[in-house]
Length: 155
Image 1: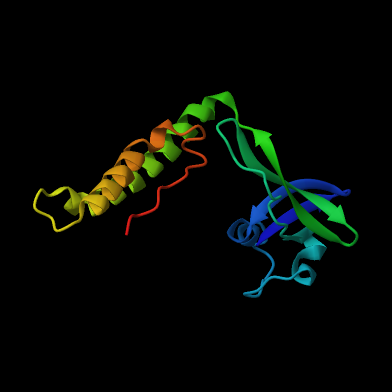
Image 2: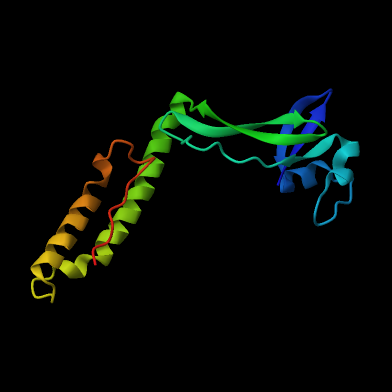
């Protein structure tokens, strides 16, 4: 759960639970925090909202959120924002390394299919060959590494 600090109907700060507890050291908070426990201090529970469908993070866009007032409650508003230039390459490399690590794991799990005397039919061997080729070509996909289409494991 996230919490929002409001002053004069303006969002001052958005905090997680640990940060909220540190900010309110003079308030004894129960295990499960509700609005009535923190409203007097200018904080409100931030109701979650779903990520809009059909919107994806990419090389130059990332999910961000802010708080908006909806009647008597504050809700989380999720949107895409531009990624600062200095973080783009770092972000790409991190995501790509995670995808490649998963790809390498799948290749290692299918190494047994490449042993010359393995008991597979020619059709099955061809299926495994195509599967492994598709895994090796993962990084050639148009939306790599943000939206990867994984090949299906042959039967």
